[in-house]
Image 1 (tube, helix red, strand yellow):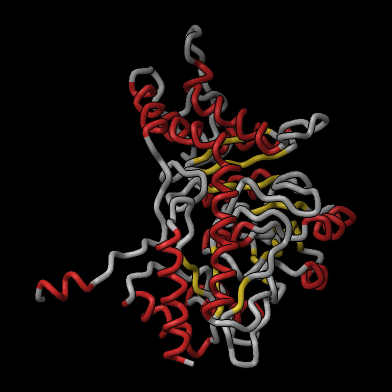
Image 2: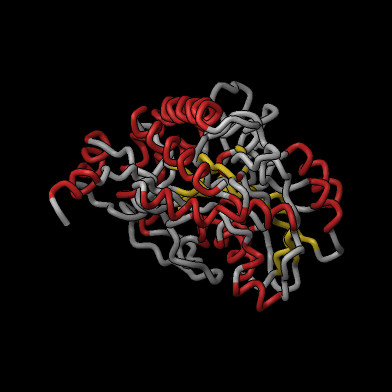
Length: 404
């Protein structure tokens, strides 16, 4: 490679960059000088603060019980088990999600019952949920896709008369609101993710929030092997014997994780506003660069379209949806242009394990399948500079014109 070739290659626009800084580093270092590195006072403090965040500005609202976990994937397993899901049960959910949503149901011996999604948002379709209920249905597991809340009012109206639980997968944000509803407000429990690419991150980690004290008590046992007392509960007192009261998991958040999370929590809403400004600019620039409709419908020319906004989004992801025939080629061209991308998500029922286990085929959930065939997630994080945003849009427009 010549010097001119190296100079011509542009710096990559990364798909994601974390926002951790010196404040988080100092908080983490302080924990190293204390007794507890794992489940201890920092976790308890973060759980309290997250509960208060979820009801911020609502003087008459009681904060939910929050239980910190090692990851959102195990949060889902713990929450389903705490809601008494087991073999023979059916849980209605969406095929537009990551593997962890479905895996959690399968790990407990229950059956995921997929239903199709709304074409303009990719969110679970309440009408399809109602049609999928059977005598074996134990509950409903919606996913707040891309950081937009599913229609929880409609889902609650379906679940409550039939005594079904509502467990929300809110891995894509804690700062979401729609129709005056926030995560966990109407559901029996809600799970969150603090994975590396999330808006609030400790590298990995998760939490479950629930309004039910008995569910929270069981979650605390389940995340700690199923024992009756954790080490932090016993610390500072005369020795106490503990008991194994049910089969649990090693799935707790650590004080080191919580120390990274706590300084970020007060900045969540400001960071959300920064991402929203980027989303607004992306949309405006796409209209300029490509034209056509970008409000949730493809133009006759097949112009990439955007997810329709519902309520207050966390803007965890920004997706475009070019025609299926050009999606993979566009991914390749964006990669060649130095643009980091992802696909969130391919419809999960078409992945090998679920196809082989349940016999799913194309046409089972056509809306989810089309979205899965079209979706490209573009770089989205608060420090994404305008020049980088322009590079992303220009690369999309160039790829589209080359492939159209």
